[in-house]
Image (cartoon, one colour):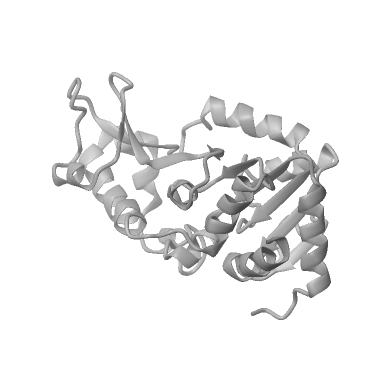
Length: 250
């Protein structure tokens, strides 16, 4: 435990969450690290081991087989064995008890849904769905589809792509609209496991703050938000703080 979070901060946060009219959780890679999913950036991140070009949309269409080999190794090797941790489970319990209205996640791992959360906006899409680049049909991911690369659509034979954004693609319109709306109507945002460096997602807490939302931040280290928009900084890992908050809330 970091030793930097005090009981009064936890109690203040619990009181804030109980009194809030609408609370949003905004999650990043840090919430899933303790589930065994490595972050993308940093010395131990995925981009230190793999070439990011496999997630360039231009490269994907030019060299789909090579791109899919990298995608399979990066995402489906790491993601499929991961299980929700205490932080994912706390958010699901908060939703069930009307203490959380919605999750906006930058993650594509599907762990919030596996934990039981139903109100989830996947800002960057999901690795758990595939989309046909030819006919636009969607299908759930299953491991056997990786036996032949690149995988093809069973409906039209077109090239399948994971339904998350690649470099060079826009944020999904529906996710962008719903997330922007929440910055205007939610009165509390819980920022968990994100450094605030990935644009445009990183701008959402700033926008929420401009509309008078209270910002609770859970991170092991100060982020781009800490000194500028954060009202309560709970310093520690997502699991550490979740365990403390759960005791205070329930």
